[in-house]
Length: 108
Length: 121
Image (tube, rainbow over all chains, first blue to last red; front, side, top):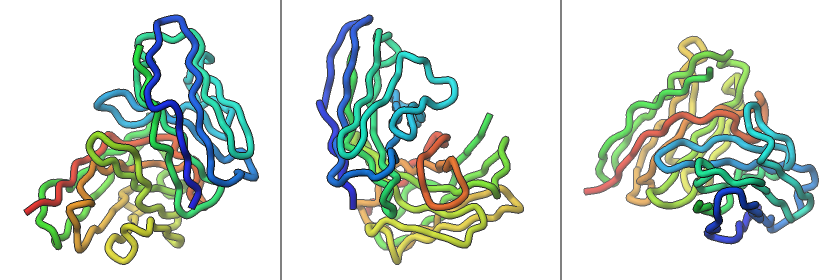
């Protein structure tokens, strides 16, 4: 089973700042089979990024993903108040099981 | 827009059973794999089970294997999760989730709002 470790646990930033979230896999993902989701309080998760770097439909270009192998990054440039949420990474390269990281909470 | 509406949750005693349903609309249901993902209150996400578009291929997390059964009725656009021998640790919000493709589970491009299952005596 692939274990995903996200860091930091919590990120406290101001509007307009840049957020950098990390997701590290316990084994190399041979293809960029990594997705990122945003979950606002009381809501279901929402797909942000798939294939490590492709933005999902309707996602602002403030959100970008990068990385390969075992190290992946979600960057949110120019933070806005509505970006306050928990962000999860998920791998789908070695299944089953699909696995999620423990999440990074972004406070603005 | 894709709609996924879960039902069937509630309070059940340890050892009991419950069946969740997920009514899907606004997409061609039979063409997509579907999953159930759960979230313990205040905690992270745990994938539970997945099913191919035809229903011919199923996958389960080790934590539920042998106790939960995923199925679908493509004539009714409905996904199910039969949960037997429930344990306290199965208490969670269960999300119905649409996969981006039809085959092996991959990433989820749309989620339902979730339904709470509480296992307690």
